[in-house]
Length: 95
Image (cartoon, rainbow, N blue to C red; front, top):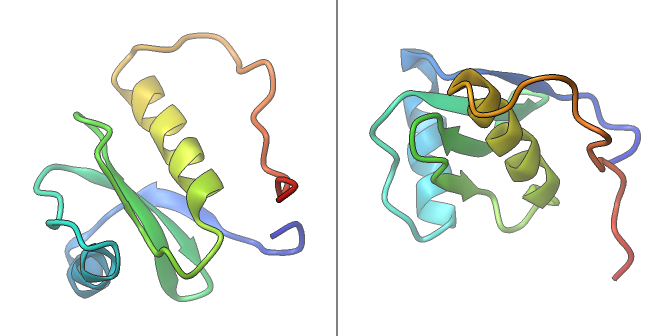
């Protein structure tokens, strides 16, 4: 993931198919509230509901760190976090 560029953004109506795909892959119900998504290329890899922090992600991709990042951003949007983070780990973890 170190050479992968990605986008974190609010979900739009155009993301509905991708969100349902993620939910199916994750064996979860699609979230119903406002979402933040992590997009790599043209594919959604993870989504987090802003109000609840509920997440769905592609289990066949290294999407766990995207979920962490999305939850951090959602908490910021909810006003739960202020200031800057000490350090957010975005490097691959050792197995």
